[in-house]
Length: 299
Ligand SMILES: [Zn+2]
Image (cartoon, rainbow, N blue to C red; front, side, top):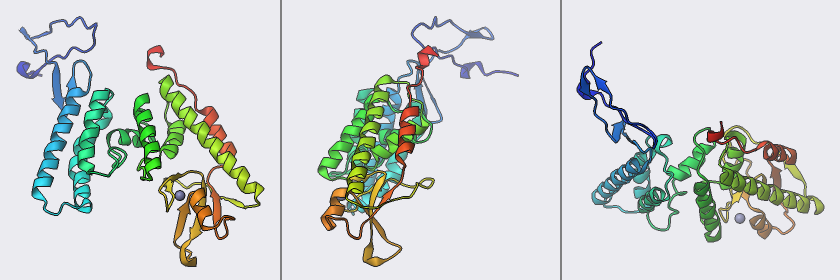
């Protein structure tokens, strides 16, 4: 087999790489510091900044085209366009280059803010990049960095304060992460574990209050791929214990509420069905078996 020597390159990665000169058929091989393949730029330092910057640039360009070309600048026109034309730049092979430097994350956040327009929650709004990283964490993929999770949590709490719906249901996602992803970062692990504990405590207190007041709780286990629930009134995430009413007595339209909003309809929860999606033991078991995985360096 004959090689085209001009097209062969050697990239040296790693700080302690001796960077030997490689030769092929008598001529030295080129040593690039960056190489683009399948649309993703790989840097010899393995930092993803170049790729992040390129993605931001492309998305910015697309947003410019959308804004220039579309007269009707209402959210229900711009948002789908951004999601279908802008987001792909940010999501293309993101598993390979998901940002881990804060400055890259902030740049990506800025562009998403621009894409989502004002009033919309920048990142969780469309669930790409780190919203996407978290969502993807529900399926085995690189787990989010500790501060990505923390940022997401903060955003989540902020949303709750502002009554803005978080597209990423953090409690739901945290439980999914605990169940399916091996976490080796101790900070991230601690944060998720704490979030799970708070979630269990919240469910227990709520459960006890309901039982003490004589309200029946019906168990209805989750089905595969069942979505996370949000309160119909205040958009807060409702996890595990759902307060359900049926609208106009119809059997097909059910509304999920948080406890507060359900009690605003009826303090004694008349006409409200309380559903429980996980047994306490089930949650405790997930909690217990969620342990810190050995760090990659110690393997
Ligand atoms: Zn509510």
